[in-house]
Length: 489
Image 1 (cartoon, rainbow, N blue to C red):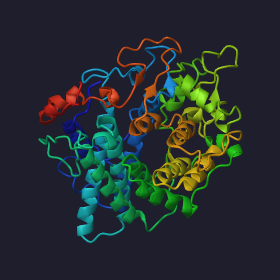
Image 2 (image 1 turned 90 degrees about the horizontal axis):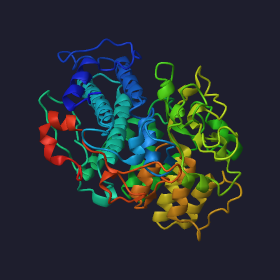
Image 3 (image 1 turned 90 degrees about the vertical axis):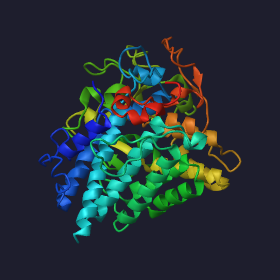
Image 4 (image 1 turned 60 degrees about the vertical axis):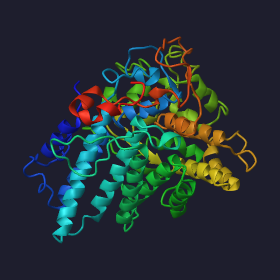
């Protein structure tokens, strides 16, 4: 499939302001009327709907981004090759093959839509029209999120080399002839923080939870996440504490945790993508990729939990998080044994979904309160408050009833990272956590003796393939970045 370049994306953004898989009832626009296509708050809502729908695609949060984080982080392994997305595990990436340029094209498609929306809102506000604050706040927050994801895919960690190339910083609509160059990682993060701060100010008047959309606390949660990556621990802790202290969300008790995956917009969901019949990816969904081979028709069991993850979770056999794990194909016939299949995205191990017609249409929980507690634990530890760090960590560690609670004497970064792995398994965090914290990643290559030639069994952040290559199609169309390919590619 041919990748979308900046110029193709620009045309798409102008021609279809918000047409995603038939979801939106809005006529396409053309380049000649793009600056007037948004005239009312209803129009702005339509564009936001389209952006949120694009986020549900298989090339973004609907599947690939989540798999990328855990397959590359060592928490997932593969049973055999050639089932799909093998390159995430094997790191078999090149500019012309296995580049997964759909990350680039989808991310920048969303950014182009956001930029067009913001420019139209600015135009309308200059004309004296009101009521667009929340839409602009959502747009700025989403742009911060998209850039955060892109710079993590294509740029080195901020705390490793922030002067390295990130991705082009584009905050306005482009001319057809535009050839934007890559900004630095530091410049990307500066833009992300600016967008999130401005977005928070615009969203602050209404702090109620908003199903399927970005609200004030989703913005704060993103700020906490971004500042953690930047090692701005005081800022990360302040944002996390504001969310926790608001009591807008509450942690599930251990006996409620498994059932929570069958709920839409539950107590812990700070940002959740609604999946309906039109956005249900069915056999291409996250749930389908994580389930056991043969459990449903055509289910291939693409990815299984690694032995390393199962050993970590197995520190307490009564950890409630075993409740969304079930036997994988290694033990499928016996019905007992290795429980490496994950059913978070099927609602339950009995494939109940979350109340929709199909089990594969489970909503995607992008930010949960449990992550905020773990961010608070790490940030408190790094600022020297070990008592607070242990307290925040124990709020999640409680899900494993037989483990000793953390104390000020025992709490450590590795203990927090292990808890993040157990709590956020399948949600796309492990690789980014290990790389930002400068921890080596070991892969479960000996599980089925799967041949891997593109990396060693253990890698660290000096390995050049911890970032993706810029797709060759993009370089061909935008020669301005021909000298800015990531090293080693």
